[in-house]
Length: 157
Image (cartoon, rainbow, N blue to C red; front, top):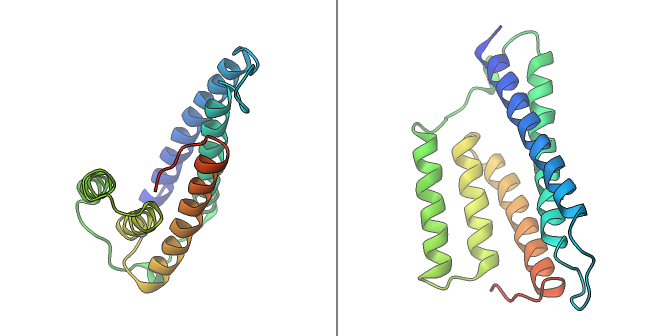
């Protein structure tokens, strides 16, 4: 077993724990009382969180299954990876929260830059990865802004 396949098994094990947590979240949300005055009710946020966890884990599961099925390592995909990725992710998260809280930076711009930076840290450093994660960040930030402002009635940016 290669190190890539071992990481894929670890990812699948973590996804199993996440899916168990989501199942418990949905079970707990089903026991909450129905809404009386608010449009979505108290069970809306746990259900939204569970659905988001499932949707965001699908690409991880796809890559992990693909890596498990791979027979040989593809050396041509090796590109520049950043050392100390975990520390860089933490520093990026702190900078993102500081930009939103202290600098009052726009939510869409900050979230797009945050997702793109995290993508470059955990994947590879090249323009294709930047474009993919930048587009994903733009879509995600606009979707979150829409949900928060139109369904949860919270203005975030």
